[in-house]
Image 1: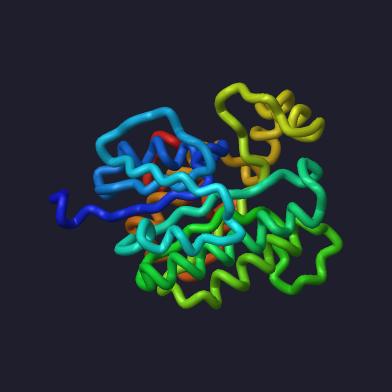
Image 2 (image 1 turned 30 degrees about the vertical axis):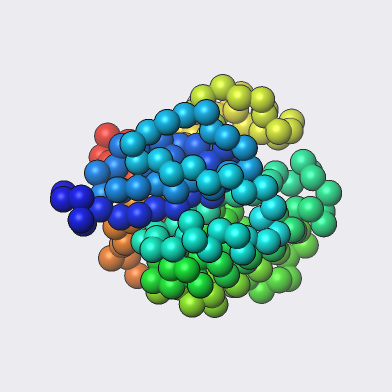
Length: 232
């Protein structure tokens, strides 16, 4: 692949689990020429592809307009766990931050493709009793209406961390402990964090011939197996 055909990719949420893997994979991906990583704090790494942009207030992304100019694709992984923050903050991070970032990105790079880390059960009708599902559905609806030519909505179920970490709550500690059995019994209810990141980057950069733009956990697993057979 020649440098002129390589894509310019912007990543948001690179200090998180999935975003971190997306950054690593983007460095390895020959289809990616530059990676603009937008984060609240310094990453402490260097790479020939990396263009690091510090930005602390995602409620206002206006100052990012220049950094977001000329981008071919974006992968948005910024989020928060239910219970980790108050409900008002959860909605702000899940909905408002995604919409604000999309607004500025579309103004600077209207033809960019957009991969969004949503979640299993995301409810576009707004009727769910589960706040997380309503907020993810609200964000999905806004992104689909933002004017991008391609918006890809990824709805993973349980995301397996792969590398040891401090789990955010008891449910995640339990799922990690029983992961081998859970994966065997319910394979379409789990996805590795690195596999999810690969899929989000690949689709944003290379597109897909799949009908529909919503990828449930089963779809993500099938995508990973097709593109990276050794990961199946």
